[in-house]
Image (cartoon, rainbow over all chains, first blue to last red; front, side):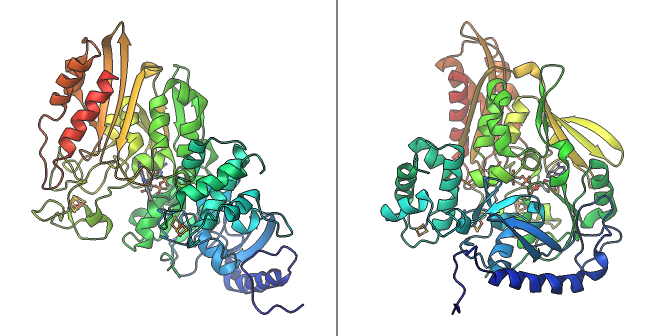
Length: 212
Length: 328
Ligand SMILES: Cc1cc2nc3c(=O)[nH]c(=O)nc-3n(C[C@H](O)[C@H](O)[C@H](O)COP(=O)(O)OP(=O)(O)OC[C@H]3O[C@@H](n4cnc5c(N)ncnc54)[C@H](O)[C@@H]3O)c2cc1C
Ligand code: SF4
Ligand code: FES
Ligand code: FES
């Protein structure tokens, strides 16, 4: 079936983005050309604009594991994970609020641990497993219990901070399936909500606990 | 759409020696990142523009926590603040550091930011952070220390042209615990006590620590001395998450039958370096751990404070924190 537009939702069955990244990949190979393999003791590659005398920069063509899939992608040395996710992998569920580590809208999990993707270089997570809000549910688009509970609780107001709240909530329940309300508060402490819907989010996660 | 940070070469050494070589080679254009949580702001704002960024996060030998032969612990500089906070040995013996680490920034930042980066972070004075050419940035004026300067967050002690304060929550705890910083540079290894690691503007106005270009902080060693002591940490900030301390306090006391036998106490965000309250220590040692001693100590703590236009409130704040720490 023909798609009219790319949905934000990550569709694991679609090959569309695969072929897109393959095109990026090939373009990238041509651009990077000579650098591959020059690394020596360093893992990784080179940015072409700003070469210092001897240190070859990281290899730009990398594969990162996002939501359980290996995604080949061309990543600049100075690129943040939020940028890679949103602009190269079309995973726009991850929001950028402040771009300075001060709001949590860009929260993703790396190896099960929440981090601000605006404040991570993509090259530093090549070995990690990245999970974004698109990847917290089931493979066929089922919602995670945290998401269901948020809907039932009418938790979001404008919704901008919601993906980050979801990821922080899911990460908490993964390491602690039955948190106290205080533990939920602490786990969401790094997710700013300009609408002040904090209690709704906390309620939702408390409700989701046990069923996650 | 957010702008990207300006381009740089990214190198990812996997051992300390290569990191030092890369940093030394890059000279003034080099920059080490551990968790990057302090560094990326500088890059994004285009205020610091290194051409070579050396990512230390791939050096496994400087991560993790282990007990040392003398009964203390050694924490690899690249250990995340979350790992420091949650480590069972640190919780049990040096709970002060665990608490302080858990009060830094936000969960996400603690999951990425490292202990080494936290004690090596730069000043948070917003004039400086917004790229103005003040003394600390190599210029010849201070924007904060003027009659109209916004200096609510600035210092009470040790001003020397610059009035910025130490922003770190772990630095006060490590100073109180008498930690030692293990630094490796082009000329080999040296061990610097926490009380000398942080430097004020009178020594060097453009740096917050003794780290020289090419140096890598590899570990932080905590001696057994204060293991299991009675600890007190409190941080006062505008918001419970993200905000830097307006004032923070970290103390360790050995109390026996109600008498303070020994004490180590440090106050943060009132000077460019963590302020070891030696006067307080001298006054309370040998006294009863009670309200009276606490009041006496509180008055002595702020002796010599010199407030700026907007930070007088830090004087009673500091006194009250000392009081709470001592009466326990
Ligand atoms: C929104 C926000 C809120 C914050 N709130 C707080 C707070 O409340 N309390 C607090 O204490 N901090 C706070 N911080 C600061 C943050 O905790 C520190 O920036 C973080 O711990 C730094 O660790 P890092 O590893 O990410 O540092 P990086 O950015 O990687 O490094 C910081 C500096 O130290 C140097 N460096 C790092 N590691 C080494 C090493 N091993 N050897 C030599 N040099 C090294 C780097 O070159 C750089 O100059 C906040 C930061 C943000 C963005
Ligand atoms: S307090 Fe220090 S960092 Fe701030 S403007 Fe003055 S000189 Fe610059
Ligand atoms: S966008 Fe990353 S923390 Fe605000
Ligand atoms: S719902 Fe609007 S920012 Fe949280």
